Amino acid sequence: MILRDYQDAAVRALLAHIQYQQGNPCVSIPTGGGKSIILAKFIEECQKKWPGIKTIVLAHVKELVRQNSEKMLTVCPDADVGIYSAGLNQRDTEHDILFAGIQSVYNKTYTGLGGKDLIIIDEAHRIPQEGEGMYRNFLMEQWKLQKEIKRQPRIVGLTATPYRMKTGLLCGAGEILTKIVYEANIHNLILDGYLSKPVSQRTGFKPQLSGVKIQAGDFVGAELDMLMGKDELVEHHAQEIFAAGEDRKGILAFCSGISHAEKITSALEKLGVSVALVHSQISKADRDSRIQKFSEQNIKCLVNVSVLTEGFDAPHIDLIALLRPTRSPGLYSQMCGRGLRIAEGKAGCLILDFGMNISRHGPIDKIKVVEIKSVEGKAPKKSCPVCGFSEIPAGSRYCPECEHEFEFVDTPLNANASLQKILSESEWYVVKDVDYQHHLNLKKGTETLRVDYRCGVRTFSEWVCLNHTGFPRLKAERWWARACENGASAPKDIILALETAQNGGLLQPDKILVDESGKYPNILQHDYFNEIRNVA
Image (cartoon, rainbow, N blue to C red; front, side, top):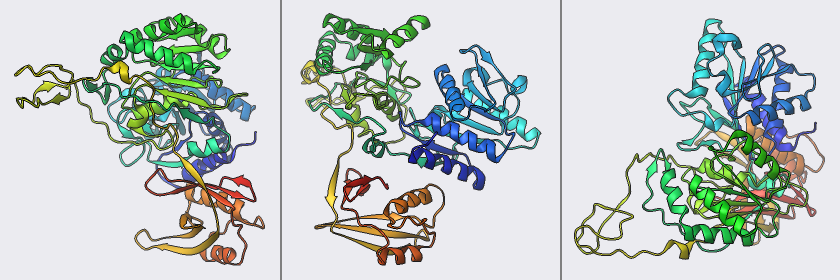
């Protein structure tokens, strides 16, 4: 199997970190980017380098356990692979590579599973920040056993969202996973044709969420269910989904609660849409049957409540309806990610955001991650402009002191999908000249090759980290391979690289694609002789 450039770079980054550095690495690959292939190739390389090592791959749903094990055998048919999953009715233990459901093995280290040298966690954002939980319980048992036999297991994480659903960044000091060693950018994968391009509807919307309580960092589900399930809202949302989805192949709707989902399903059925509903109170057999019918395109729309955010793949999905407002950047990313896979005849994926999630978190390739503090059971307050009384629940219509009536805007008048763009904007600039410099950062003590692209009155810069290690060096090698005219290997000496550049050994791109939505401009792609080459 030939890996894509970013998949190969991710495998190399993991191997380099495991081999030469301390700590537990993590790679971030967007949904649809082929994470299971990276996982399989990494395991294969580890087996070659350290024959006989015991590896376990943990996932939270049986679908991922099965998918990862099948991909492992596709990449390496002779691998010694086993499965330990109650949901798959398999409990293998005597294998070099074990794919397991965390619910099945979290307490089995001392009862048949034994110690593992390499522990890989898929959907690693599910590792809790503190407390116990099944992942932490499993790791504690492994650490305890390995201490007894004087071996130290290494832990690797893979995720599409390197931040937790509630509490911010996944990796760092004090965390189980210490460092992101490779991160593939959604925008680049879309530009290279590996992911489907998402677009958002440009109409106005502002949900009335001021009176909804926040618990454990997110909106209280029962209150969202009531708010989003108002009859007039349901009718409007169903009408907009119906109109936008008329020429679409597959519609996936994320709802705020079971009652809300039932109403949306009924409203879509009345409009003539073939639709099915899945949620936790529907039997597993019925859920599986409905999902299968949707995947086979026998029905057009699938409505769900907290069931299909992870471990579900239907590449034909080309419309996502976000009918669930969330404060979780991870949940927002996972919901949108269901529509990013490419499929034959699929031009892109329309995101209808009815919950202002894009405004709250930013475009999916520029998600803003902050620590979300829990406000257990406390509703926001407001003050009366007439008498000054300040302890008034934000959702109240009248002041309890002076009976002043607050002005409200009816929600149905603002019920359309978000006007915010789901993907950050970028622009091509014609390159007039390129300048190269030896850049020394005295504060950090690092050296790089600085490249300045002069585009008329604008100049855009990038720093090529040739003498670094890990992911920065991998990026530098990719940059050099595409820019070097004679195909020579990337040097590690900045002075040598500068001499090559100044002597005409590097190509000048005709155009560069620049994303200016962040704090600093980011060069996404380089166009050499009208042949676009991604060197970001």
